Amino acid sequence: MKSNLTLIGMPGAGKSTIGIILAKILSSGFLDTDILIQINQQKSLQQILDESDHLNLRRIEEEEILKINVDNHVIATGGSAVYSKKAMQHLRAISTIIFLEVDYAEITRRIRNFDSRGIARSKDQTLRDLYNERQVLYNKYGELTINCNGLDQEEIAELIRLNLKL
Image 1 (cartoon, rainbow, N blue to C red):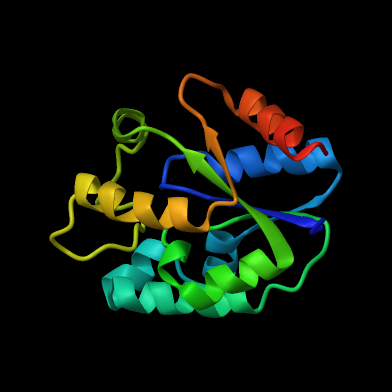
Image 2: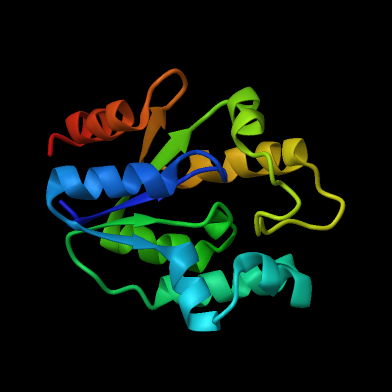
C-alpha cells in the first residue's frame, strides 16, 4: 500500500481540516498544497488570481504538486488540482486518492466568500458551473469516494481509516 493519502474535492469540502485530523489519527505528516503555493509564491491564492488568472494559478499548483516527494503524509490539495493530469498521475503514484464528496447545497452553505476565496475559475464561472465541471474530474481520479453529507470531520476521518483498513 502507498504510504500517503491525498484528499481531493470542492473548496469547502473540508480537505484541510479532515486532513489534519486524519494525520493525527494515523501519526503521519500533513501537507496542504494551497499553503505550499502561498509560501513559495509569497502571495495568497487570491493575490495570484488578481495579478494574473486562474490558468496561471493552476500552472503554479501543478508545479508545486509535481515537486512533492514525501512518505507517510496526508496531502490536502487545492480544489483545482484535478485539472492537471500530470499532477494527478504524480499523486496517484505516491498516494491513495480520496474524493471527499459533498453535495452542492452543503458547499453553497459553507462557501460564503466565493469571489475572494482564491478559487481557480474563469471570470464568468458560477459556483454551480464549477461544481458540475469538477465532479466529473473528482470521480475520475478518486480511488475511494467518501460521502461526507451529514457527517462531522472526525466521523469522515474515521470513515476513511476504516475504508482503507489503516
